[in-house]
Amino acid sequence: MGFGQRRWADRAVSLLPWALTVALALVVIARLHASHGPKAASAPSDASTLILDPHDLVAQQVVQAVGSVDHLPPDTRKAFEYTSHFSPIPAPGPDDWLHVHPEPEQSVLDYLASHPNRPEPPRAHVYVQPLGELRAERGPTTDELAAHAHAYFGLPVTVLPVRGIDALGVPSRVVDGHRQLDATAVLDVLEGELPHDAYCLIAVTLEDLYPDDQFAYVFGLARLHARVGVFSFARYHPDFFGESFAVDRNVVMRRALKVMSHELGHMFGLGHCTHLHCLMNGANHLSELDRSPMHLCPVCLRKLHLVLGFDPKGRYRGLAEHYERLGLHEEADWARQRWALLRREAGP
Ligand SMILES: [Zn+2]
Ligand SMILES: [Zn+2]
Image (tube, rainbow, N blue to C red; front, side):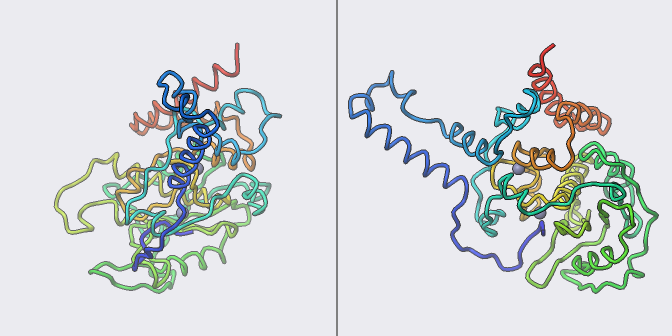
């Protein structure tokens, strides 16, 4: 699945989740008012009992999308609830992903019905393949990428030796003075060379990417079942756009880690998320990518939990330590809060 900008925006009006939420809220409010009559509806003291908070509706939608978790221990169950650590998807602007790419929701049941890959011996390793040298000033090191993939997905991660781009023999094109690699052709090459013990193989490059002639570019591209993906640091720096200012290293770090874990998420069978503000939301441009969170929403977390079987508390604790090591303090705080919440739920 792609993660980038379509060349010609499709302006078709779509039934977006936020619009649906507002519409549902209005229906519920109207029904409650009708059943209680005008007196109840006009009494301020009763108003709070009549008007459902839109967050309650989102919470209900999350419960439905997550499905049955009653059999799980309380702290694990808690990980899949909509709490104040999460927020709805911001209303999309005209250039944002959901406006341009109307997408269906993928509930946990839909996810299971798609038969996602599961890491099973011997296919239990994540491989990271640098395509061309990754210069340290352009983004995180391969060690940092590997540490993130390990903290996020829990599988062993191996970084492969750098591979020359020209030797791949994939088509390219030049747009606005930048060479772009055909990301679809890169995935075809990777698919033919998947190591026998690879759960998946993700390539990373400083070159800009495009998936086909319909798209101006993509930040990354991955296949849901074929175990291959690729992503690019090309657009993380303002100099790509001819700007002379620089951005903080953490800004570039966040962009790279989000795109990598988003593409890896696809390789665990996760579709784009339309439930909450989430790492698996599509991003049509850099500011939408910057706005998106580093974390998975409860629905996407449950999907990953079903194929990886981790302890959510332990995963959040590991992520908090990992983010702290990278100097990503906001993400570390968030993961620590999640860990603390689940630990309280687990009891003494
Ligand atoms: Zn995507
Ligand atoms: Zn999600």
